[in-house]
Length: 462
Ligand code: MN
Ligand code: MN
Image 1 (cartoon, rainbow, N blue to C red):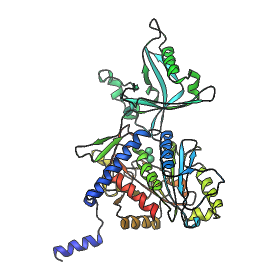
Image 2 (cartoon, rainbow, N blue to C red):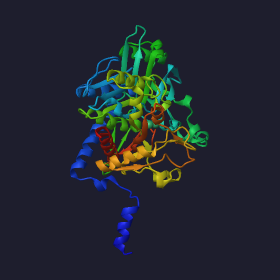
Image 3 (cartoon, helix red, strand yellow):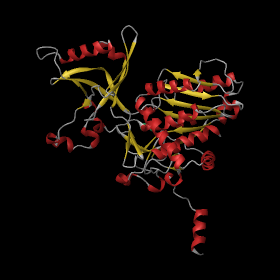
């Protein structure tokens, strides 16, 4: 065989690694940049699940969606959203096809790892005021010390009214801080493992130091300030959801600005493109739905998590309203479980299997199965659905890749996919590869974000 025959045979028979940049032109690159800007605004505005719901509902109403009430009539082309307790939201657009043809569902989570306050958080010690905390989700605790933190959340007061708190985000706000030990005195600490160096009970947030009078009563002085600003008393912390998140804003990374660093890419970097695709759906043939769920980082339980009945309640209610059989609707529905994967990192190459890892700038990553060890805990998408998605993306010019979460025996993880699959809905994981996942400041690529948006658009429109 001559050289050109070998080249042709390679092209015909062997897989090819695609870098998104080889497929962009001036127009698509501009669209990618503009999508990245929109996303950065979203992620700065939505650092908690509650804020993500507020954002989604506002955008939905702008796009003509109305609040859905159980038992209401729906019409083809109608756009609705269901706000579940302000912490998760389901948006859908009714298609022109019979509902029994199935719903095109995408599901992402809008909670991220963070530092929650305990129910009795406030105390003073060593002439400083602190909040006790209980971390939420899988974090490397040492990463959350010695960085600027902002407080976000809601407090329900004794009279039943509430106050929403966001402090630490504005340039002129104070920030909060978790102390770490100076290296000079860290002989014992640095000889511990990374996991043990900062134990959970040391994640106490520094919130002030000024005594009320005569060098005394720092706690009382702080409570007085908090009361003046928010009208709450110490007892009100019991009925509060206050959380500390990194006070960082999203920033472009690199001389070429090809990457974005932000807090909470996992999983808002998938939630945003999935949301946009449904917001932009107008009179679709298939009914399309996006679920933005809470509690994924702690197992998807609870009334606002993906294991809640709410999702099936809505499908049942829609089926009744549209004269369709609910079981048939679920059996015919297909879903992209929108979650991030770990991008291959050459600095930690030994935990990845590079032939089956996702790479930065290689596009949206399809993850056939998650779980740990022998695929424990996964739903494992079937070959037929992977085949459908693959052909759809190729037809629609979506640059995509596959990826496993690291080496077989190295660890593992899960997504909401299994809870959707358990409802007899065909599902596969799809999302953005992330560098430093679950760190206070994570990194993704604009090209992968853009391809994820294109993927959800293609899925909703076909
Ligand atoms: Mn996730
Ligand atoms: Mn996660």
